[in-house]
Image (tube, rainbow, N blue to C red; front, side, top):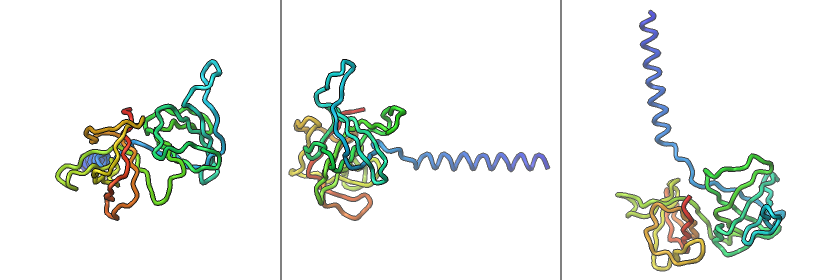
Length: 200
């Protein structure tokens, strides 16, 4: 009886390992996360000498549940629409998922991308994109598998600082501005602008 019970326990343990491995294979951790809200305050960022740092500032927002959050904007933050944050404006800050976060309240995020008052019908997608192999005609596909890019001559490709980018985009984190997309999975679109983000 003991042997039967031990054998059964071993088989169940093996199944648990197999299931866990399968789930781990399907689990895709996001490269970027986001926080959205309405701006309640914009104030300058000061260094240890209490002097304002050019290009750096804090934004305080309230999300849809009225919960506050602080967003640190730096000189390397990307603005897809060249619009600065202002009180009562709507913003979405995208930040690197593995960035260290201070354990404070309200939570504080460092924005890699700050989309301010996104105009209709445009959308922004921030993710790492990789060229699809043997499918989708080799288009660039976001890591979350939700968006595929069909780039044409009208697509503007630039760096965070506005310089033209003409290299291979596969493997880079991108801020993609687009409007019309298909209803497929992944949705396919021809973006108007692709901004290449700095590597983390």
